[in-house]
Length: 139
Image (cartoon, rainbow, N blue to C red; front, side, top):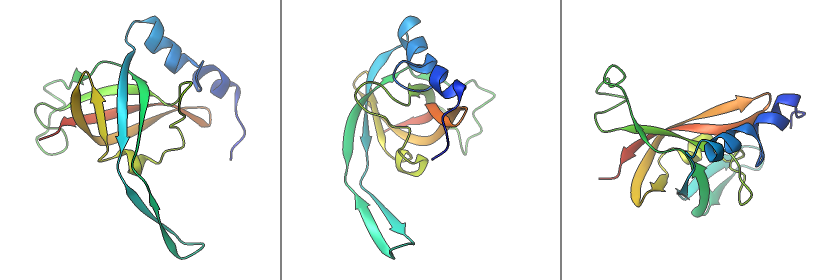
């Protein structure tokens, strides 16, 4: 694992700027991430490892609609939203969850289930401070 930098201590972690800004600006909402069951191949052992489904609460910003010029009809569809979640709080550190596992998982915010279409890590130094999520309503 890479050595923590000064920026990591400031931006990442439960008391970092990412989490603190969500709380201070009143943007913090409780959301629940439902990670899907995931299978990953481990090339060192030659085995497929099955990670169980998992649910946990995260701090999240309210979902925001994409602007009309961002909607391209293939990657971003009409009705898609995006938001930011902190990578860790006092309950769970999700900075170690792979981006691939977040994609196609469910984020429940304000009682609405949204599928995570893409998860862009927000890196500070060497650690993930948060994720910008591209979300789509569950059909």
